[in-house]
Image (cartoon, rainbow, N blue to C red; front, side):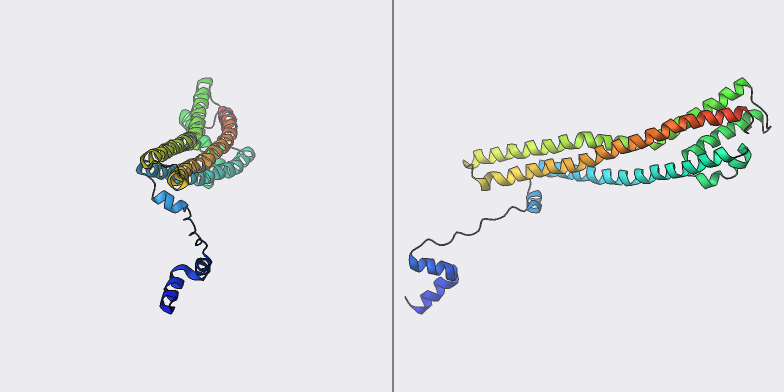
Length: 252
């Protein structure tokens, strides 16, 4: 063999393959291409891409609502504890009403403000015990204010519930479509080899995984906030009755 031919074969096959060529053995097969999840997503079919975009948007909205809701509930709980202590220690509604600005994040403070305003309105500013009709009116106003505060605390929780219940099924739709596409590829190419089936199956399972990633935090957060809001709601109903009872006595 000439030196030029030797160099050409060596550069084309490498030293290991060249040794195998001299021995008459078959050359080492090339390493099979690896499946990259990012490339699978970028190369997925249009319906699967739409499913993935929807699920990613659901996941982002879920975490945004979780963050905002956590701040909302934590602030309401902390400032409500402070306000209830001030309410129990106060000598009258007038002194407590002067410091309401310090409890802006407390739903209990807004319930008290509603009851105090109604008490002042029906008595026209006079500090006196309320009649039965006036007391019933103030109690109705405080209970209505408590219901509004509960509704406000529950805001955006329906979105968490919707994401938690629908995201797995949207991901399942992407999975079903991906598997169907894999079977269509098998039929069109008349081959069931892994290089034909694996990419389609993999992108289908990615849709399922992202659906679960969006749904699991949403369900957990919904249950957590529902319990926290339920505790505050029970306390607020009792507080509204307490405000109405003290208002009947003239706000003492």
